[in-house]
Image (tube, rainbow, N blue to C red):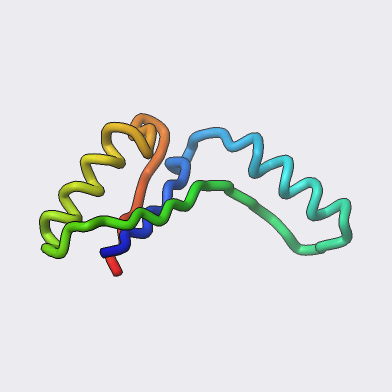
Length: 79
């Protein structure tokens, strides 16, 4: 089973990388870009075939290592 995990900064957390990308896009001529936030994306292949067990395992991975839950949110999609 494949898990797709999207990690993003929580609302209100400063995002200097997103700000830098936003400025660079403007300098490259992309008008109308008003706000950019950056994040991380992971694809994890699991041997587990039970959806509930796979979801629980990936949630534990996110809580322990993949996401800094103080400043980041994560979203899990199982495929």
